Length: 224
Image 1 (cartoon, one colour):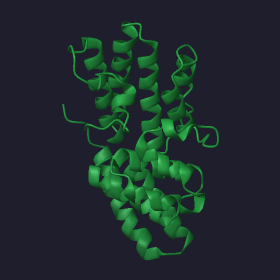
Image 2 (image 1 turned 30 degrees about the horizontal axis):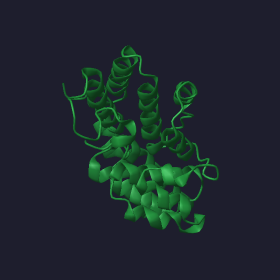
Image 3 (image 1 turned 120 degrees about the vertical axis):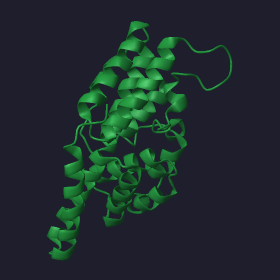
């Protein structure tokens, strides 16, 4: 899964240009944070956290404050994409020691401080969401090519209470197509709540079947 919420260059763990091969701590951290995201999105939380801590050990062992802060930023963004509340406190603490303007803009984006951030410093696929009037923001989701960025933006709209039924459907289909069980289950349950509020028994039953399938898969141990 070669996607870090379009942070490949922002995270800058392996470098974005040619030159000498990067040191081991960079390549190790980049590989481990990818593994963290993969397993977190699959709902394999114990394994995901193990990979994340190993990534932090790789950058921390090299004494790299900025890179370690960025790992926490990626973690925060991944959890936000799954509608898990995360204040990004660890990132903020480290960023206070080694501030970076682009990282700070992304942090403000995740923290929903959109009035204060410099939109030009955001990864390109998130800029339209911030610049678009609130009532039209759900329309921007279909134009986001990266699935994890699309899921993150949908989740932020939910948190901001700007999401509509189409937003939930985009999130469900994005997570389903990628097999991301953790956010899929969350969004299916949101759709189920919506169907219940509308008194739509047929839709509730359909969603209950999908939810059961996902929950059953989460009970299985991850492959070794």
